Image (cartoon, rainbow, N blue to C red):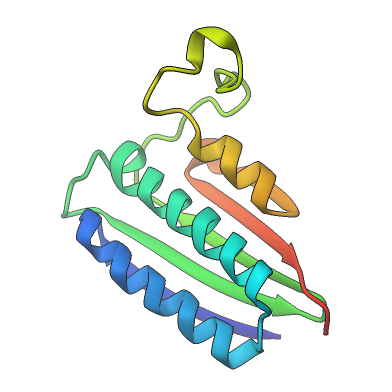
Length: 134
């Protein structure tokens, strides 16, 4: 099993490092373009949420991202140092009253782009899994 890990301070400009991390994973594991696109959007969205909401953009708090590869599954684990959130009661971004709101689509996007989304430790950890053809 392959494991790779990166940790970044909670600054939105550090998303570039996350993008490079995903680019390296694409090369290393020969991910095809459609999976790569889904991973890029879902993982950067999760890291953005961890920076903004989880750690309240506090640069003294870190967001960590790890990747593990098991046969036909690639899993990204995003962890922040915040208090967590109630992931059971999220507003539906597709309901009419929420369509005009600027936020609230991140988790919706993650769920549509990933094959599996798991929240752990009260939402401080998000695991995004993608099936890959080996």
